Length: 424
Image (cartoon, rainbow, N blue to C red):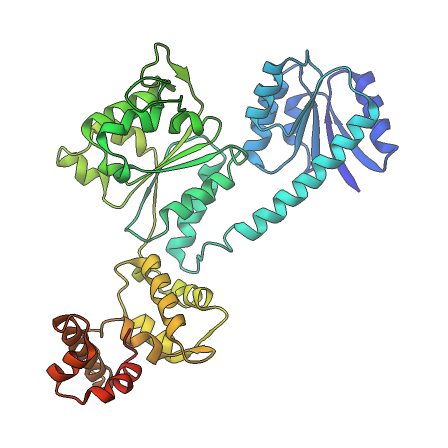
């Protein structure tokens, strides 16, 4: 049975709605105020009046969605202006039903909202921590911090080495936030030329400069109502840092060539693979922007610091191939300076080279350097052979016959050795 939380201050209207929904097989729980609604047991959908005695319906939506981002909330009543509808949707309302509204429309919209909520929860189940391997305590702690901050608009700084999954965590945070229905706009700061900085972030009007043949909104406007993720923020120039800081503090942007500013509602998430404290101490990062960003830092551990995750990640990337115990031992010997990104690339290459349905040590060893403390003679000799063959190919400009001559082997045996050493 569908459980509907009715938040309506007028007793007559509340009873009529409860009777209407009950007649269609739904269970309605009545609340006269927003305070009561916030203390009510869980429901499948909330139908609230726009005007309540203690809070506005829009503010109630914000608070409900902050606690449960996928809870479907419908607002009913009000003047029905476009401004009312936009405000409701930005707060997280799924629908806005302006007076007068037909009873059959209410029933239909409630049922659709419940189905939408069911789909969203299933999507959450599939996308949540199942997509981010968190076997190690340090990674679970990081995701717990994401859960704590996701429902707020607090600025988040994700810190981690290259390849640790900062962008994935930013996506995870956005999908668990009340802004999940808004845009998640991702920008790699290192890839934005200084000459195009303002146009890229703040947009431009038509004719603002040579080549500006049409208006462009810019990244802040694209993220309005959603989340703006700035990766590698430590690479911004001092001028760029000052402009980003101003936009963050004022919530306003002015497109290049425009005479007026525009307000934007953006949740800000930044990421860096270099500690911003060190950049700040070296006068490469503004202190005021640092303190504005470091409100809620989340540290992602390197792969070498989360060995419990290594086996599961390897199994996931290797699927449908089976990863043998020998292959897992080879993976554990490596330090993974490129972290999860390096692991994924190595596994993908090994899959292409694998001779059967399993991924064995022999498939991985040619792709990884021998561990400095590994005294296994077979492993060391194989690593030396691989390096000699690759060096011979480099010196011979890729010509196998000449490379074979440099190595002192018969050219007709090249294919045998290449297969044995799994050379590409």
